[in-house]
Image (cartoon, one colour):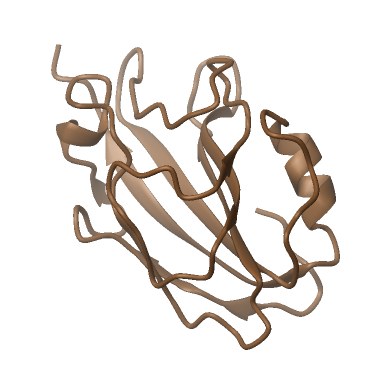
Length: 153
């Protein structure tokens, strides 16, 4: 997570699972593979947009990015199965949400949410590095929700 010198904390949650609890299979490659609803509390005044990066640091080849999206309007809930903003390219090479699908064992999935003081002017399909560079010096607050998943098959 990017950590600017002075940042407020967002309260991130989901009606689908608790922090550090298992993500229901509906939101994974074994289910409907749709994004869960994500609640966002404590948005600071001056928030113009939200960015979200979902990653799996436990992937065998290094951190794997499942969902990269920005220019989400300031909301208290990103709805389930939604296209809330501009999508970047994830580690699958897709511009969409791809749910947990670990090859083995239990993996951790971090939903990192950032409140920004502006809309970002980066092209659709940009990768995480481009997004993080564009967010520098524009983060008002941040928070994260961690979900777990292990395939049943």
